[in-house]
Length: 212
Image (cartoon, rainbow, N blue to C red; front, top):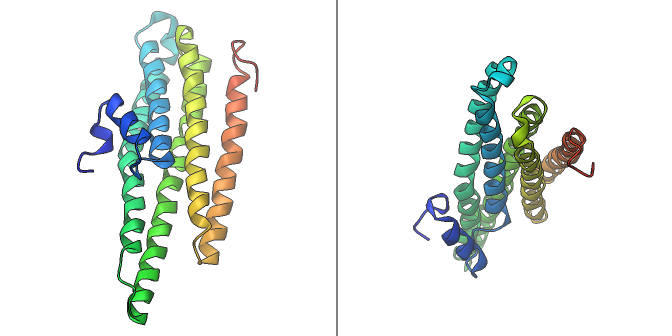
């Protein structure tokens, strides 16, 4: 695939996801969902800026708009990074294995690829988690006409965190470095638990939700 995933149209991205191509998969989709959550957060902040009714929140919303845009940009870049990390592992799988030396080199390359394939989605989860406080702020103090957009941003953040975390976990199952596995297992669990907790807290702010 020569074209970057991030440069595809919505229809093209969906079509290649639906196809039998090995990528994009759940990791790239999680990054995309997170990027959309960040974009929605920036949108609500933008719809608040310049409104006399929300003058007291003007400075805060300007700061949130900038932060959310930075998160969105980082997650958009991660859409292709996730697929690239998977391709690194697949390339290692194709290395020769006729001699003991070749087998050892192949195994080492595969392990390196698996670690990369775990680290990239972890970075996605970590970045997406930064959306929660921003989404909470725009729901509490932003334009009330866009409160549902802020709520969807929080849901998108949760999906991105947990979805990316699942991609970390599946790669950890094949990694032989026990210290690495223990470290990332603990870090993913912490992010997962926080994502669920923060989404519930944010949903409790609005009467439009069922207070998950």
